[in-house]
Amino acid sequence: MEHWSTRKEIGGGIWQLRLMLALYRRLGARRIRALLVPVVFVVFIFSPELRAISSRFLARVSTLRGSSPPSAGDVFRHLFSFSFSLVEKVAAWSMEMELGRLNFKTADALDLVDLVSRGSGAFIICSHLGNTEVLRAMASIELARHLPQLGITSIVDFSGTARFNRLLEEVNPGCMIRLVPAMDIGADTIIVLKERIASGELVVVAGDRTPARNSGGISEVRFLGGLACFPQGAFTLASLMDAPVFFMFGLREDDRDFDSPYGFYVYRARSDVSGTRRERKVKIQALIEEFATRLESLCVAHPLQWYNFYDFWGEMSGETRPSTQQDFSRKSRMTHEPPR
Image (cartoon, rainbow, N blue to C red; front, side, top):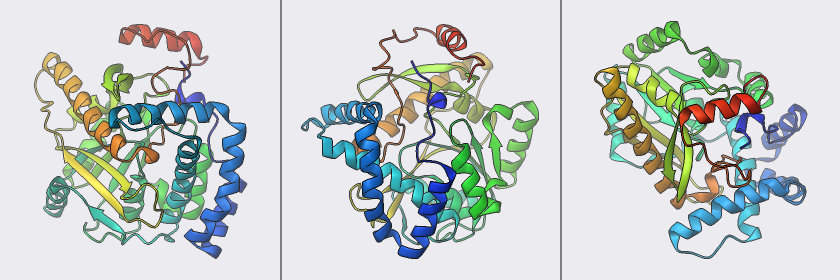
């Protein structure tokens, strides 16, 4: 099964991204969407693998919804939604996006606000569903409507996103200050992260992509009707922070309306990850399953905002799913040189 980090970065070269940002600033969101249509159309026509990945994902959602199979138009709208999300991310970092269009959608969001207001921090697990990065931009440029000024540290796997990260650094140099490369996580980093949380900051990591270097282990979890691999590392790290754990998702309230406000769905994890190492192993699995359940429910509600454009279930590779963590790691080492 092809690992996501080996895929070519989606979204074009750095000059195309700069051009899109310049056009966004000059023309505004509505007109830039019109310009994106032919760009996405070219991708749609000449990227059969992306079409297949999108169609398979949307078919899973359709099955759970009991609705008709996805059409070619649904696949096009899915690819378009992803393309526009990249523009939104850059616009947010460059202070061009109207960040007041944000609504908290769950009661646990208010619990998180209260926690931060009292000077306490938390560990946040997000995903590649929707555009949670808008929240990080909002905090970094201090335009929060509901939250006080706060610090956010994001743990990021830079594999496959180097060009996009470079553009973000150009439009707002401050946006890269609080990023921690996932491959650099070690004992010293864990101490620093715990100190930041203790001082009232948020530490954020994505929980829906296996690490490029296969560190931290893999768990197979039932997700959207099949077995999918989720990283143990993000959840193991959560268990080491001695802090409240929240799941956070940022989604347009209406998938098909690009002027729709953003809703932030925040859920406090119910799984307790304290205890001995043996006890934590079982509890970490429960935490992963809880996260996957939350993620699945929102995927079904907002399928066009799912931005994991790779073979998430290994459907297209023809390979047998790894039955154990060791099998997965061994296969990865054999497939990728050096391991990614």
